[in-house]
Image (cartoon, rainbow, N blue to C red; front, side, top):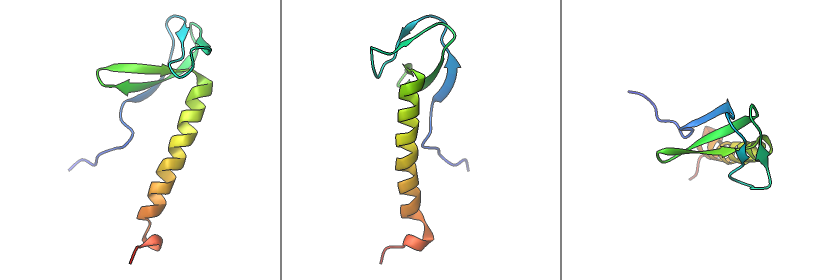
Length: 77
């Protein structure tokens, strides 16, 4: 049986053409910039490096909290 993952449809790639970051329209990605692609239904959302770092840090914190809650040392009674 395959185990499920909470991290689904996330990639890092390079832009093929210039466009705005989806988190902040003031952040402009240029051709060849690295970006974070996040699956959104049947399409993708694209984020610049600065916004990607914020998103990843925030989500790592959330996953770390969840991991601690499931830790054997933090059993609820």
